[in-house]
Amino acid sequence: MEKENKIGVGFGVMMFKEGKLLLGRRHDDHQKASSLLNGAGTWTMPGGKLDFKEIFEDGAKREVMEETGITLGEIKVICVNQDIVESAHFVTIGFFSDVFLGEPKVMEPDEITEWRWFEMDDLPSPIYFPSAKILENYKQKKFYIKK
Image (cartoon, rainbow, N blue to C red):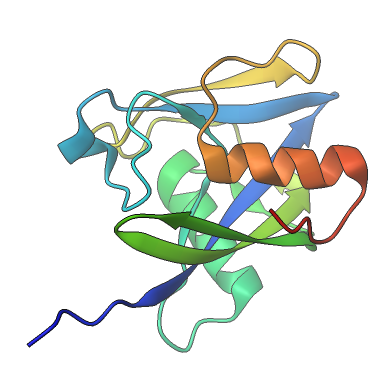
């Protein structure tokens, strides 16, 4: 019997503080980076997968808390993308927030090794491709970019 492919829903949260963007470095070990989209060693926005029966905004807030210890206040949906690799297909919802409490801490050291704030004109490389797509939507002020 052929394996059934599934589509997942995930999100990334663009968080800004004093004009700087928060990004985390994913673990270099593919097993620890914990991503179906192959993101080991890249820089990523906080985010993750939507749980069954979870509201988008609640899922984004939960993931940010789990990954960084930060409590999100106001967030808004800024884009929707499709992220596809050989073994996975995700619909990714991009969020924006500059209203939150706390400072980023490494809460899941097996997945993310550090969190840092970056100027938009001095972002690290490589950036996890779903996060890069959200950044592109933001820069172009487009909700959806067909690729």
